[in-house]
Length: 210
Image (cartoon, rainbow, N blue to C red; front, side, top):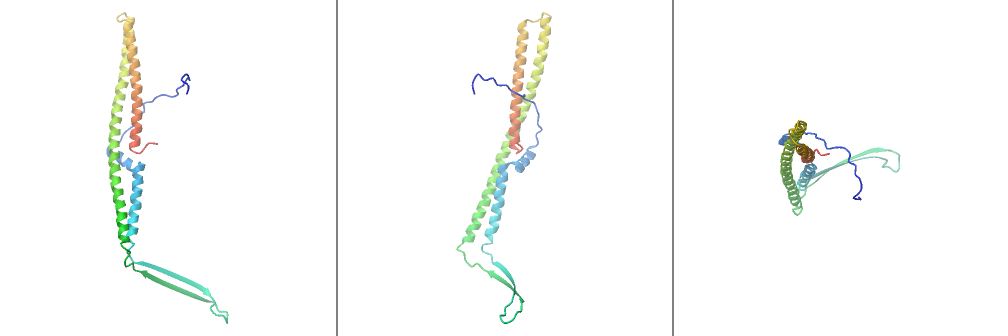
């Protein structure tokens, strides 16, 4: 972009306060919405099913089959008959070279790994939530302070103008008051910006960032 290009800024920085929830509720929201937790919970679900499947490896297998035929078994005459058959088979695995035991241990290890990862990510998210709430509260207090400062400097400027008209103070006092107003407004805008960033960080921590 050329350095001499004129940029027109649209919109403004607005002060929109957000209501926070307790740490317990925030963590509950995070568990329901954070994609990291959803992925690990899906891993646990799959690992749990694999454990169940692996445990069936050394169990008897029962299979059934049924058959129905409508046929003419005679060559010399035309006589159609119904033919039914039903069978049941039971297979007993005697030895599979410890394959089933290995699959069970592997599946259980994956399930334990998912449990550990879930606890770690929950602890990490809880720390993230605590930090986000502290920053949000701090930025809110700073925002209120800067807002009060803007009001005070505006009042001081009014008093300085009245005093100047009465000949009590010099023009330098008015210039100082105007500079104070400008500085207070700048700090206020920066505080609003910081607060909006803190809101986004908080929303991301509880899984509500859209």
